[in-house]
Image (cartoon, rainbow, N blue to C red; front, side):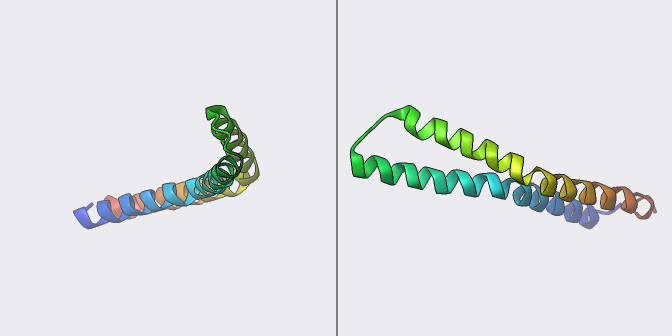
Length: 89
């Protein structure tokens, strides 16, 4: 197992982490911008107003994206397990 294969596996793992976290991050970004815009328009500066809706939205996105995330993780793990015989040479 050479350094280039370790770098390839590591970069694929980082890409997988970014891809799996993307739905939750995108939802948090959209909800955060919407809440900030609402606060700017109404001049309500309450900290819980930004925190609670984001948590609820991210949790909902996690529930909705869970089957897709699980399928991606299983596929990645299966690919890593299938690569094991070729890495020991």
